[in-house]
Amino acid sequence: QQQVKQSPQSLIVQKGGISIINCAYENTAFDYFPWYQQFPGKGPALLIAIRPDVSEKKEGRFTISFNKSAKQFSLHIMDSQPGDSATYFCAASYGQNFVFGPGTRLSVLP
Amino acid sequence: NAGVTQTPKFRILKIGQSMTLQCTQDMNHNYMYWYRQDPGMGLKLIYYSVGAGITDKGEVPNGYNVSRSTTEDFPLRLELAAPSQTSVYFCASSDMLKGQGREQYFGPGTRLTVT
Image (cartoon, rainbow over all chains, first blue to last red; front, side):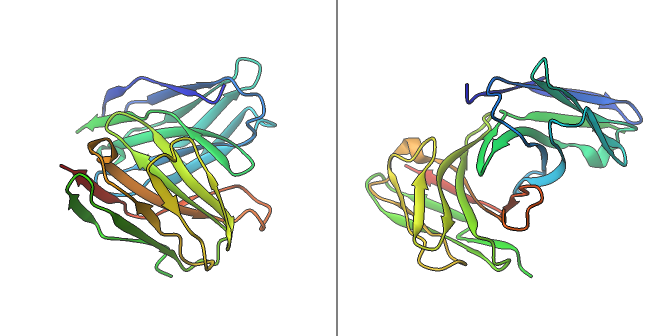
């Protein structure tokens, strides 16, 4: 119930392509779904987040799509750039309880 | 603001030794957390605190202890280090009182090796 599943484990995309990372959760008590970006040797940093009362949120090239009935959400990175190469974690939260997915290592080829 | 700072950046411990990982935040956040990150795994919550004097266990608390005597500091104590505690440790803070999202601000991490 507390688990957040994330796929794929790794992803290679050409520059300018679309990167898509998917997550799924079980616990319907979760009410906040952030995505974190982590560069090697650094701590995770919040990229974008969504609440379950909306189905999509867009910030620049980054979009979260949220499907409440399927208990799934995904991150889309449009026009992917080499600078986007990092590990991406989805998470689900209720209150101050955060559960993280295992991460997706994204490599964007120049 | 420095945000969340952690010391040390790296440490090698022998089995059975003890150490304290330091974490300080200067954002006056009421919530603080300790996570560990193992290769290919997500972040696992060790302990968290909702304010000075209040701490609670997370998913993987065994072998660790914490204290929160001030709003700013949240040290993590490892007693009798074991190889299974080899990991990267992240401290984070957040502020729920402002009523908006629950953004967690992470420190740069401490890479600990137990041999």
